[in-house]
Image (cartoon, rainbow, N blue to C red; front, side, top):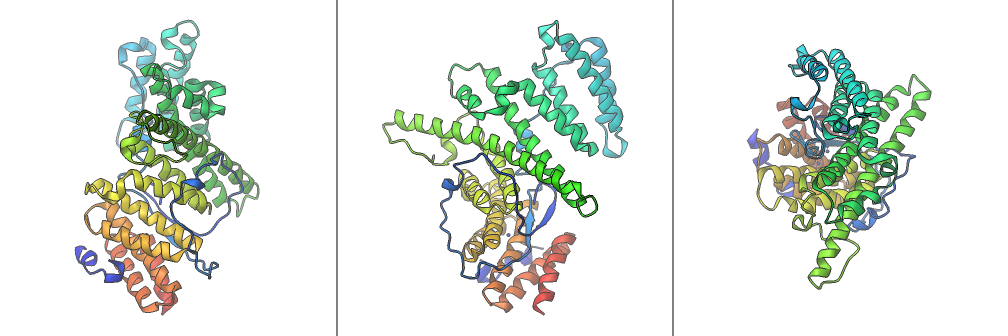
Length: 432
């Protein structure tokens, strides 16, 4: 396999959600976002070619081990020690664990869900008279999070959405869910209790998961719309909700970061700015780089999947800035940076900005080739090679395009990536 990386031509000296390969074409989202500042974050000029009507199917790759670490870093199971739970609840949790904490082929998810929900109901009943088990206590909200996770694994997205909304209401209250700026003010308060700050970060992770789940349910409804006419309206409604919650998360993070950054600027006798530097060293200490970049990545893939390139592109660029374009040489950062570049190459293709697509493809390939045995680098290498084929095809360099498509097909076939191999083969057939 390494020979394919080494044999890349001098001109080639491009992106999916976690664990999936997605084939995307231009689509229109009727929903709106509440992010007014994203467009201003872009540092790239629009050099669109005159032929802006070119349409190509793009290849999207996700991190195998995850740019979606947000689900782990900002959102987790907050179970407390067993002694915190009354004996009847402990018994239910033990029974649920025996059904859930097993290899997938031996899991009994319906049984686990039943036991977790019964345990939660008992805790909520106790919480009405015992503040130790109040509905917003970590060991209680952790149980709600587990219910949401089990529902998701069962494919019960309705139940997962209900659980995530319940969890957010417990953590923030109804008013806190409506307006992210309330949480911004709290995070910026240096006197905020550590546990309260942790609660806001849990809510941030939960809101991200809620957005992802609305997005997944909307995609499922869209697939069903061919035979179920009402499903299209449901898909649009879920896309609206996904946009709303991605917007809520981005507003919370970006406003907090901007205010924190300007506070530091003033302390250093420097001018304030509307756009922070996106240097990872300038982030608030409670916002790890993994959380911020993963949120930007998740939101960007949602926006690009719905043809909102003007929102996706600056998020991808800023996430890449926070990872310093893989300049530290760390394998994980290098390969994740190559994935971000493959998404940026795709946004160039989708918007008709082929010079940008070529630039991101070449830069991404240079990173991906550094760690050919890393799944993230390998996946992005395939997509970036394919994207470079699109660029050459659109510019009339058909022989160069064939070389890129052939290489993408060969590597995809050798690694068992049937979807990518099919896409690249179809491109070669088109040029035959």
